[in-house]
Amino acid sequence: MTRCTTGDKDPGHDGEATVVAGPGAALTAAPSGGPGTRTAGTDTEAASRTDAVTCTGLFHAFGDTTAVDGLDLSVRDGEVFGLLGPNGAGKTTAIRCITTLLPVPAGTVHVFGLDAARERMAVRRLLGYVPQQLSADSGLTGRENVELFARVFDVSRRERAARVGQALAAVDLVDAADRLAKTYSGGMVRRLELAQALVSAPRLLILDEPTIGLDPIARTSVWEHINAVRAATGMTVLVTTHYMDEADQYCDRVALMHRGRVRALGTPDELRTGLAERRGAGSGEQPTLEDVFRDIAGSGLDDQSGDFSDVRSTRRTASRVG
Ligand SMILES: Nc1ncnc2c1ncn2[C@@H]1O[C@H](COP(=O)(O)OP(=O)(O)OP(=O)(O)O)[C@@H](O)[C@H]1O
Image (tube, rainbow, N blue to C red):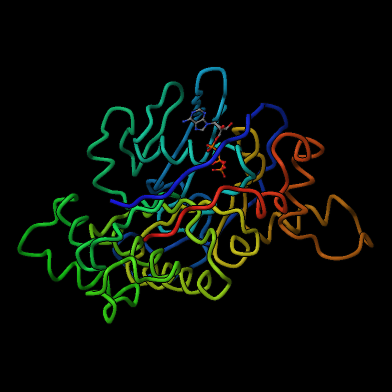
């Protein structure tokens, strides 16, 4: 099976305080399984439902390197939630704890109320996960790749062909389904991986850098497919990205993560408005999400973690299928 390569990582540190934007920090979504129509909701309404993900004081270290350092996070049922941060912020480690691929040494992680440390298989059954590393096999056709995942996720034989067809249709790969994956473009491979993750009809779809290395048109196409599936199913989407513009455009709420912790949380609008207010009247242009991050991370962003511009040019890239 052809997989991607991964590169080196940067050390993390602990440090600054968290900014939480609010009140009524986000639009709320239709319940799982319902249509994707969203209505404005109150914090009380949101709290009365089981959140899709709750991390409380999550900690994870690799030897002396603390990757996640007391992470508190709630992802609401039905929202598109963006976890943002530079290289080494701890995003992938946090996601691996949520997907149960890494243990939870301290703190708690719950997925739709299930304890990720104690109910790992039950949690896994609720998840679709597209990792940063390529997970498509270049020597199989698109359909065979999705069928493989259907078998791994125990989709019943009776339903399998229909579910594979639906997943391929959801990402517009029906016409290319019987071609080898090695003939696919980078954007098609990412859509194929999305189909692999969708075939088990997850309640929570987790995407680690779904658009990294793609050109702007392919990035837009991947997001349009994510949004269409979310609208059709009401599933919750948790995504990491370095692309602030994508987070701004496509995420209901974002968490800015730095050195293992969430430093700011809210809708993109709230975070930008919050910074504009802190800067005061007459401070010039409307700030961007990247400005918000710089404001929160301060000088710490420019030392070992790199900034978002650096990230775009230096971060590891996945090797293409084939
Ligand atoms: N398997 C590992 N072994 C040792 N250290 C690791 C491992 N995985 C991550 N780390 C370290 O943990 C810290 C957080 O890394 P992580 O990959 O979670 O960050 P990230 O925000 O996802 O960054 P990136 O965008 O580069 O993926 C980094 O200092 C990294 O070097």
